[in-house]
Length: 299
Image (cartoon, rainbow, N blue to C red; front, side):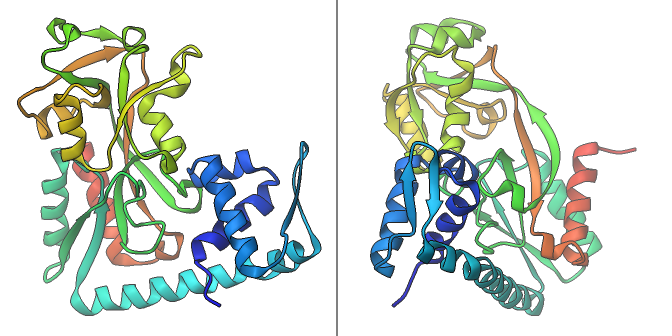
């Protein structure tokens, strides 16, 4: 019997948190999606792993037996994957860097150039991820480092160095009445339909909807997209508006979409992230230093 490690990770989160709600927040997935994963694992194993009550999720005897073994199993698996992929990268002298959308904005070319200067013969392979993968492959060990927007799934298990903040703007159809304004207050957008990330991204989706900054108003979803091009098309076609980093106005300008400053909503934060196992990796360390220095600017 083959069991997806994703199901085991979901099981561990629920077992440790004792709550579907807290486990879903920790994993940055929706609670219904997490419930489905737990049930799928129980079906595969032919055992009830939790008893459910208003007090939370309590492990059954089979659940406790599984909980004793799974953390070490996952740690061994993750270590093996990172070791194998890392060996391949070192052999090819390639640093794999995941990123979302505009990465570290205009600093990205300078980061790569400085890394090439420090590490002659090495190259940076930039891998763009979909919004359904907010850790850009880092949580799965597919990349050695990542340039990300905070918060992201699995953040607590990784090393994170914040690089910069930028204000959040709104992207809206160029024909929208609010597009004629020079700037907007966020409360003016509360009743607008929004273009959102997929539901399974959980709190990541909520962050870009600013769900906690709406004064309790529910969010209206006009469309769901997973890629920048689809996101832009949905906005241009009038399906909704969307919060975006200020830099999106430079990196994702297109006919039919207008960007305007928004007050009353928290800024977006950009960070470089890496796995704890790479704390002693000099190549990853050099890349992190390049990120910090590029953002800090000349001394």
